[in-house]
Length: 132
Image (cartoon, rainbow, N blue to C red; front, side):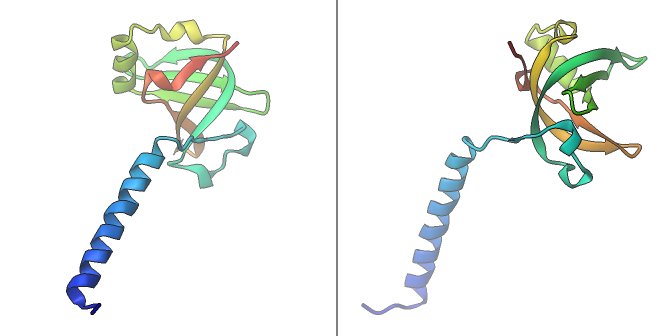
């Protein structure tokens, strides 16, 4: 068998397609890492993480287009932000955000920073669940 450029190209193309397909399929089983609030640092910015804790406070911006949740996991407190698109998602799913107040939750969101304070952005109502 003679290996020429055309054969190498075909092998590389097939290998790439198989590799990308495996990555796409396996990404469905990759879970965001669970963290404690005290362990979140600026190195986690733009990273999706999961936290267990209690929602101790719920506030809205003056325009009611942004919701601010205070989350306490026993190791610290962090603000969770739900922007207008996320709030619309809660409304579409007929979920009342106030039902999470003083309740244990598990939430998955993206770490961000605003005014030198770390916070978590929650985009989807499916990413917050009550725990027993």
